[in-house]
Amino acid sequence: MLLSVDAPLTLRFNRSGVKSLENFVHDNDRVMFGVMVSDLTSDDSDLTCLASLQGLVTVHIFNSFKTISGLHSYLEELNLLDPERLRPGWDAYFMVRPCLL
Image 1 (tube, rainbow, N blue to C red):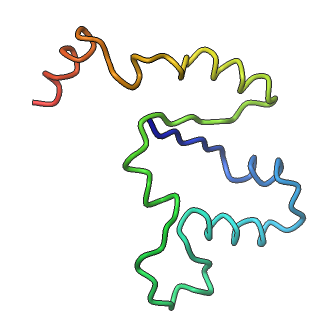
Image 2 (image 1 turned 60 degrees about the vertical axis):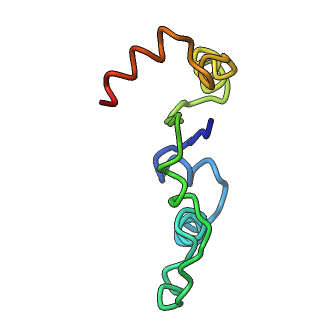
C-alpha cells in the first residue's frame, strides 16, 4: 500500500516555517517534479520524484486539518492497518471485480 498525504500549498508553506515563499516553491518543485524551474533545460529524464509515483498511490489523504490531533483522529478512522486493505476478503474482491471488466 502506498499512501499520499497532501495539503494546499499555502497551508504547507505556513506550517513549514520557511521565511520565503519563493524558496518554499522551489523546494516543492524539486521534491514533486525532480527539478527546479532554473534546471528545466537539463536533460535528466530519469529523475525520481513524487509526481512519478502518483499512479501507484492507493490511498490519498488530504491534510487540511488545523491540528495534528485532528489528522491523527482521521487516520484512526481510516483504519489503515486493517489487513483487508492489503488483501481484501472474498466479498470485497468479488464486488470490485465486476467494475474492472
